[in-house]
Length: 399
Image 1 (cartoon, rainbow, N blue to C red):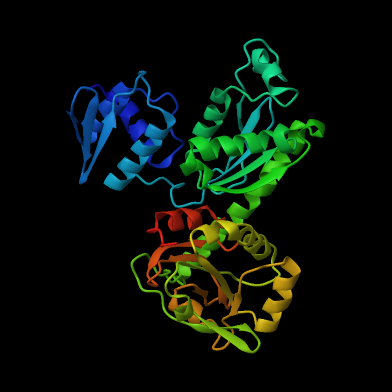
Image 2 (cartoon, rainbow, N blue to C red; image 1 turned 180 degrees about the horizontal axis):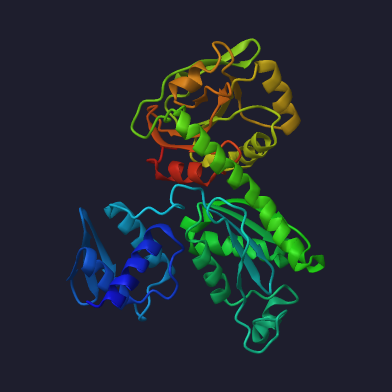
């Protein structure tokens, strides 16, 4: 193998492990790479077995000469699981992407090396006839005056850019059926669930009145949080003050906490049905308010799974009562006030340096066993997709 080819495969391997996912990844390059670091064996007419280290996976020869976006993402996971990874300076840092999208163009921004981005990548809709406002012109009558959807290749190109992201912010133009950001978010949910679950926020703005510099400023504003979080994590990890939260398979510790100043609720009282426990830092903080409002909105979904939701912080019961009334919350807020943080500590969800709970989620089955847990950065709302996915995976309860 020539030095040039080996260098190209090294770059491809590094890109798949730690960088931006390659576009137009050919099947032949994929086979060459796996053959160099592992083994490729045919299995049937169009399927192959990839073996690298202790990992083994089946990949089908694509209908075209290039791998689809989902297969490229699966290849990345396979290589990362195989290890040892070539870890770049970026690997341990949070990767946030911001998409500013209208019906003409998507501006995709990414944080580089823990810094606010200085550049962008643009993706434009497929528009061979220059209609712009009417990208699928021949179908316009079918939509009876509603905004005509773009060709899906536009959204697919943007989706490819978002594969490396673990946090995604969508910013778009318009409202309702004319909202580009809502069209794109819906497309991700239907076609790229693994990408959609990383969407942490959406924002609607009037992009038509903004200059290029103002659009970039909006994107950078959403990047500041991830930069601050990265610096915080580096500082905290050096002090080794994080405790891991309880993971799936462990029995959830029982507790009995004040739900009102004169009433308590115990976890054991909820036995026999799934339970969602949401630890959060504090009442009245902006992120916590948004997070709990999202949970409030999904209560009908939780009802379908016969699941109970409780939220826990170290605030006193009187504070919880006022906060719940202000936010119109319809699930119990429990006070882990005295002994302060005792329950949170039992779950590994207490921040000793700050004296508050982590932003941590737990899903319990009907027997009180943890089936899923997640600890989010304190400045980022985790959303509800992880909860709903975990509940969906539970055995169905009888009617």
